[in-house]
Image (tube, rainbow, N blue to C red; front, side, top):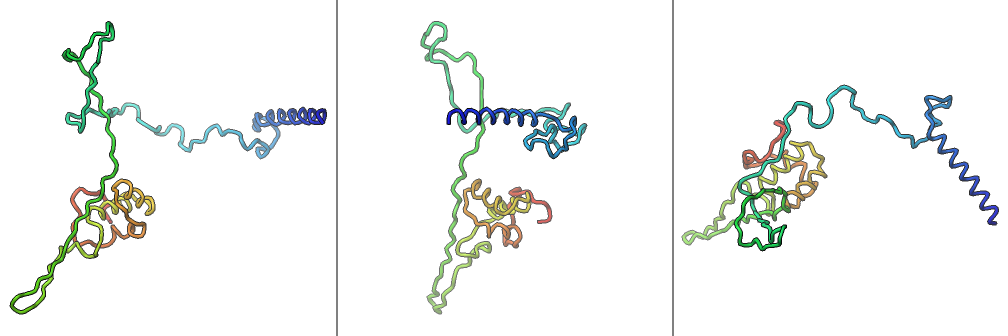
Length: 208
């Protein structure tokens, strides 16, 4: 059995070497049709961009943009040296001679949505006994609903940026911390609202 297996290994090794040599050949310099080339042959130029056209990224001659420091960060931490790097003397009480500022800008988790309750009260007239109900603001219709900013941001994603409904729903839930459904998103920017959208709250396409 050992002899038979050794012979099979030698035969398979030779076959693998032959296939590797065939895969390395270029069909353009041989008489074989292109269909006989290895399916794993690497394409030399997969780019669909025409040669000589605009290259991706910053173009030559254009001014670069660098992130700048701001004067009023939300938090500031100081890192003075604790001891001299030369002799080990304690530097805690020594004045600062120079400093170099670094800033990291990051986003925080979405805040919890703000819920405002409107309570419609009723009172009975002491003279005639008529019960009168209080009038709610015009934007309060359903027992529970979303406010104008939520509708504006939903319209911004679906209409302003043409993002598919499922993805825009996921973005609104993740970035705004509010739970909306995919069934609510499509009509959020199409239905007329009794309120006006806050100025600058979203950038639409002009037709939605």
